[in-house]
Amino acid sequence: MPAIGLPPSGVTVSSETAPPACLLSAIGVKVGAMFGDKYRAPAERIGGIVLILIGVKTLLTGLGVL
Image (cartoon, rainbow, N blue to C red; front, side, top):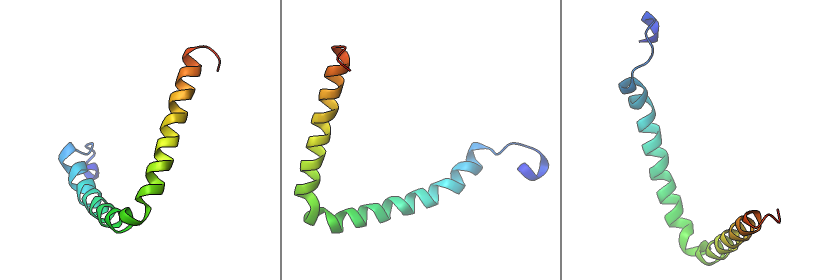
């Protein structure tokens, strides 16, 4: 539609972005499945530490310390 001066419609935009998004999502699921078993424990540990740090920062900000 831009060729005739009209803005792109939602259908045009979604038809252009949906296939690559679906493909990248499928690739991410496959890669995640391959590496998931090997890196599950370290990833959970790092994720837990990050969540604790976020909680501490939120608490300290709420108390006015930060």
